[in-house]
Length: 327
Image (cartoon, rainbow, N blue to C red):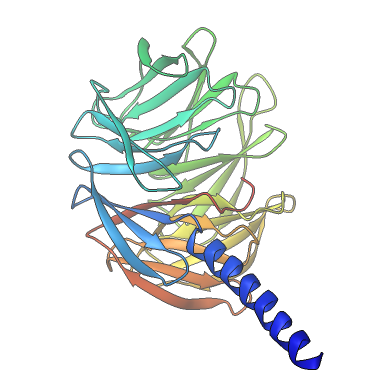
């Protein structure tokens, strides 16, 4: 009887192990965009190895996971194309051509509009999305070098930083016209909005700070600059609804900002020019592209240090995965 019980227990435990192992093996990959190699590295989050390189169009700069999480889109700025990837299998779904200079990209939360920043050509483009195809509806002339985009939770306004004219521009989505523009600090890059749509955080890559704007009124008001580190650049939400990470590309660090108090509460050293980031589903790990080191760096936020690096391609830029913390 004891032998039978032990054998049965082993069989059950063995089955559980196979089940758990299968679940781990089926974990969705991490995608790292290599801008200077025109490809995407596929990283297995179980073995932490690069399993594939997916070719894209010329000079891709940003990755984007669609709101419905059915596709990861690669914006190929000099190729005038978009590459759609399956976020679960890493298979190419399709290539969309004729998208002029897609440097940065976002869908509205309601997925009715697809919006791109044409970084070289100084315009923001609005594409109608019917669930299958993209149709250009409006091209809005902006200032010099539109860089990053943020769209409010109601799908009413898109905000774009102007990298070389040091501005933040708000565009009404319904009319595709500029609502207002305001000056920022030096070389604004990424922009992130608070959950209530009242605050915008702008990374000042030409400075050492994140600038905070109150956008709840008719005109924007700059209310604070949070000193983080030289080359403040890209954002990612920590997943708790309160904290925000910013990569300081020149200072080789990541700062954790309390959006309520608007103060830095933690800092993590990251070598090689930390750029775009992703946060694990449990919020413990930050996956960051070390732009100048050809690495994906993994930061343990409890240990407050880099605990793993994976070699990828030249000039790694964007990082995305399905298993992420809430945005």
